[in-house]
Image (cartoon, rainbow, N blue to C red; front, side, top):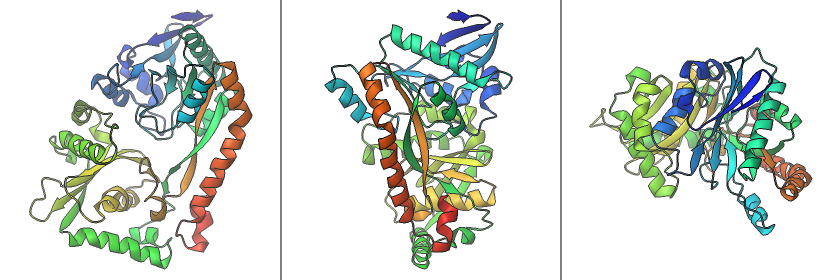
Length: 395
């Protein structure tokens, strides 16, 4: 614990040390659902983070006159897995310079490549000054414990501007995001595409019908309790098939959602004609107000185009009908760009404590970002929107 005038800064080894109602008073007004206490606490109590996974919780809080006024979820890591910001070249450079890259400090929601990370700060406080205080505490902590650098991933765009004033360098990346351009129907969404791509999307949706599958969207209390462990089975199956070594969340995490986070869960489920109670595939999404986030998907058998229907088309159709304005379908982009998900910029923030690494970061980050922006532009030029729609959809 460090005291500075009227403020007291404290480090916490688990989020449960900070009362839920106090944390959520600052987290719930945000657009992102992934900084809320129940989500972060579930990641910890389920064993998804901890010594087993190499994510050591090291959260920061600030009190003024004994009352919490700011918090930040932070983690000490000995690897770069589960971040979705691929810094392996920075790690390699550090080792070639003769310096250890790990451990490092990371600020993000573990395993969650969704934009919105920031410090949680009471609106009555001076945000810049509280951020300055918290950064000073982080710098001191990292120096004391020989931590190589501090990295904030998938950051809130407005908060990014504040942190750049405090010495952090912004590294440009991109994700694939669907925006609701005042669509009233799914046909309105189809109308932004070229004729050939409209036909392709319709063909893909018909392929699911031809396979004898029926789709349902289930939310909140509509979801049977036994579906939550089932989500883990689908998640686990997909990780085992396609993403070896990426099974970060435990079975207990998904089981806990039934009591802790059911109100934000949206499932796009697929059933055979013979059994409409036991899904053969599903996608798992989280919705908060006008924003929805696709997290995981899986299927026990191979069905033509089911991935596209469960992860893109059915959620978009539901989003249009339910007032969702933004849908982030999750990591990766091979299939998304051609189905109406333009590349959108997002940023991570970085600071290295080894002087040579910090010097190189400052010297080359603008060039790196220019190359990334060129890639974003090239991706969006290749999306099969009608020419009259292109600028509108990717601006």
